Every structure is written in C-alpha cells, then in structure tokens.
Image 1: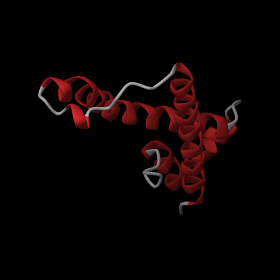
Image 2: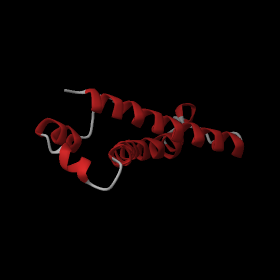
Image 3: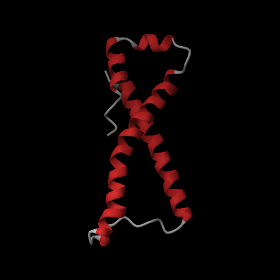
Image 4: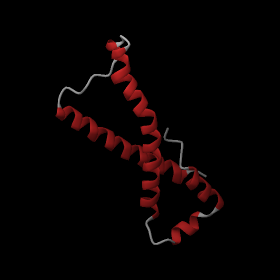
Length: 104
C-alpha cells in the first residue's frame, strides 16, 4: 500500500530527528529511496514466494491445474515481465516517498 510509509522515517519527521539526517554527507532522497525500496521489496517477496509455490506447484498436484499459474510463453515474455515488475517497484517507491515527504 503506498500510504504505508517507513516507520523510522515517520518517527524522524515527527520528532525532528530528520535534521540529523540532513547533516550526514549523503543525499537524503537516495537514502530514503533505497530504504523504502528495500522495505517494500522484502515485504512483497515474503508474500509472493509462497503464492508462487502454491500456484505453480501445489495446484497441479492436487488437481486444480486450471487455476495454476502457467510458465511464460517465451524468454522474451519473461524478460518483459521482469522489466515491468522492476519499473513498477521503482514507481511505487517514488510515490511512497512523495507521500512520506508530504505527511504532517
């Protein structure tokens, strides 16, 4: 969900500790972007992998093959899907950071 922002960043903004982060010799946007991207990627991966295993392996074994997730038609399809997933993760993280910065 894009409105679920990084709890550490939320705390830093509300308490004023963000001033200490501004004094560090790193760009705060890049640091927050990397942190938010990692936070969102880990949470999504922990949900995605069990669903992938269930949909690709378990459904055909228990007789629900019509509901199984099929393999991609070609390598090009898999590559384009992977590019779309990466770009959507980057866009979602950027939107998340805009919401995070705009929150009171």
